[in-house]
Image (cartoon, rainbow, N blue to C red; front, side, top):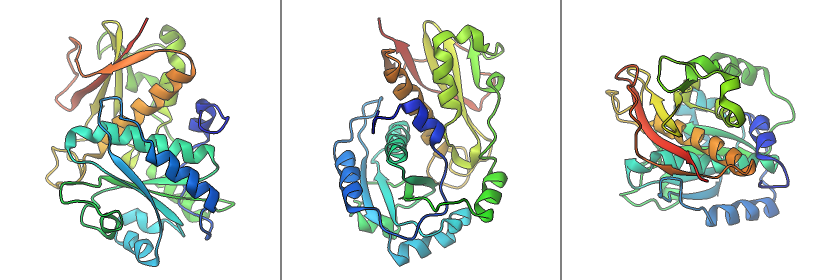
Length: 288
C-alpha cells in the first residue's frame, strides 16, 4: 500500500526496534517521510492530530534514559512527534501514528512506540507545541541495527512482545460470552489476524471486538490501575485508547486492501459488556 508491498506483509514484518544503526536517515527518505506526514488525512473518527519528523539530538537521546525501558533505545537517529488538542482524539492519534509506523516499515525503517507524557518535554519544544497541544506518544525511527542484541531479545521477552492472546479472549460473536470461531468469521478472519498482530502498551492487547447487529464493534478492555488509564491515579496519556486506534488502523487498512468497504461511527450496539472495565469505543460497518 505504501511502497508496492501489501499491507498484510507490512503488518507481519513490523516489530518494535530498540537498536538502531548510528547513522542519519537518508535525505531522500526523510523527504518522503515528511511528505507523507504533511498530507495526513483525518482519522476514522474525523480528527486530525499533527505529526512532525525531527532528527534526534544527543540531549533527546539522553532524555529517554529517565523513562524506564525507553532508556534502552539505542542510537535512534530520529523521532516522529505527534500532538492532539483533545482527549477525544486518542483513537485517531493511535490510528494515524500506526499508519506512519507501517509506512516506515514498508521503507525498511525500524520504529518503536514510546508512550507516556511528553507535553512539557524538549520534544514539545522542538515542534513548537502550543499550550493546548498534548503529546501522548512519540516514535523512535531509523534504520535497524543489522542484528538484534541480546539486551533487545531479553526486553522483548520481558514485555511479552512475541506472545499474543488467543482468539477466544479477543473476538466475540453476538455477545461477550460467545467467542467468535475462526471459521465463522469468514473473510473477516484475516482482518482480525492483523488486529491481533498490533503493538500495544506493555503488550496488554486491550482490544476486544464483537460482531453484532451487522457491524464490528471495538471495545477497550481496561487493565485495572494501569498507569495512563482515566481510572488510574496517575494522570498520563490514556495509552489503552491509543491502542484501540492501532487496532482500528490494522483492521481498516487490511479491509481497504481486500476491497472490503466500510464506515466508522460511534454508535454502540445493544451488547452487555462483561464487566465495568470493558468500554465501547467505535464501530465499523460494512458498506454495500
